[in-house]
Image (tube, rainbow, N blue to C red):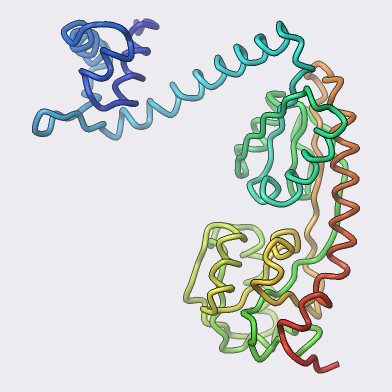
Length: 314
């Protein structure tokens, strides 16, 4: 059986990749750490590290196991941090799980509003992609969750925070910036910066262009909408992204509406079986206020970038 001491030794070795530094971290000796590692590898039946010129190099098995170890340690550290805050009467804490896009767009403003009302409270934000996000929400591990629209994960209730349409983003000075609305046909033969092939929005866009019979040059792929906008800002192509990310790039890219509606929904998810956090209601109000402010900005965004794009053909 693997014991906690062996797990501690393994984590220290993965963190430092050095028996000497791991021993220092554990306040132990090099022979003891080496012996514990040998016992662990013997127990597991496979090597965790290759020895290359006197240095440790983690095996693929070790990297996989380290992911599980880190998750357990994060859970313990979160419990310890919560206990410390409660003991010190710090005002409580709130745990939020979100798609990465909302950690960069909706959440910063909501946190500002919330902290103005609860200056002693603490917020912990975790970012995760689907389907792990839905799984973690179902497991009741967070007070609130932010995801795109769809069915509520099991064991949760879901409400809509914001509903808008995807928008077109163009480099400053691009020929299409003269138009107020962009059609799918306008993208013909344009270099198009795409999200990954397994992304839900990417699949939706590809289907729309196929149905319209429009061929783009999809030479570039980027992992997030923010990365897509960064590439567009460099003038290497055009794209269609969610409107919240586009807002954060106004001034660096030209934002234009599309002639067709490609919905983008923001949903708030609340666990049904987790004890109610008294701060959750206040943060929900902060989210609603920030969503309202973003809706107003979205209505103005294309007009606000007209000067960057040049004269508009109305």
